[in-house]
Amino acid sequence: DTEVTQTPKHLVMGMTNKKSLKCEQHMGHRAMYWYKQKAKKPPELMFVYSYEKLSINESVPSRFSPECPNSSLLNLHLHALQPEDSALYLCASSPRTSGYNEQFFGPGTRLTVL
Amino acid sequence: AQTVTQSQPEMSVQEAETVTLSCTYDTSESNYYLFWYKQPPSRQMILVIRQEAYKQQNATENRFSVNFQKAAKSFSLKISDSQLGDTAMYFCAFMKLLSNSNSGYALNFGKGTSLLVTP
Image 1 (cartoon, chains in turn purple, red):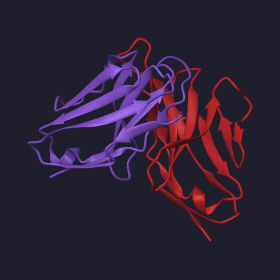
Image 2: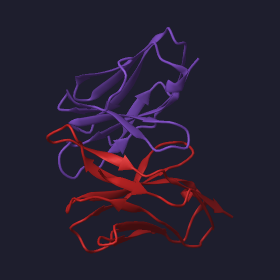
Image 3: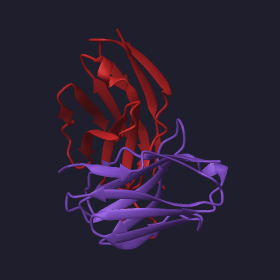
Image 4: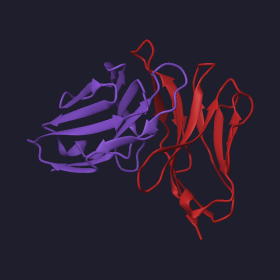
């Protein structure tokens, strides 16, 4: 299994809602990433998990809360989002965070905040 | 800080022709990795090709090859025999050491080049 899966594919939520994005990989990778991608822009790094521990938070607002319950699963909990948070949220994984690492991306979750 | 510049926002090529996408970067590191990623309209980001800076030989993957000029900090992608399925956004990316992590690396992307392959 060489893929990263993400659910849901699309999500529409109001500003008062709480929702979660899910990412899963079964490649034995020990590093997982969340990226945010606005339309016609490159992905921007949000969080990095290394060996199930949060190793980097790129100054992301607290309304985004990541969680790594185990080495295969990565969640992104959303609460009180703003319309400008509407974007494609990409999950990626790599064997580790140090040294050369190819990152494998999931298909993304298209989030719309009303 | 490492920056990645893709100067061609959009490009078009006819099927079966060859096209070259440009990328320049800025870094003070001596060893690093460079990547080209492809993101078709279906949005799945796929690795096209990678280059390790300490290797002088240019990487090649089937119809895709790079022209890596380390001194000039240039990393262009050549697509030969273009196919309709090559239509996508192409991102050049530099693997960077995260500023506040002892061992963390992540991808720093250029702004992308939108490539359209026409019949």
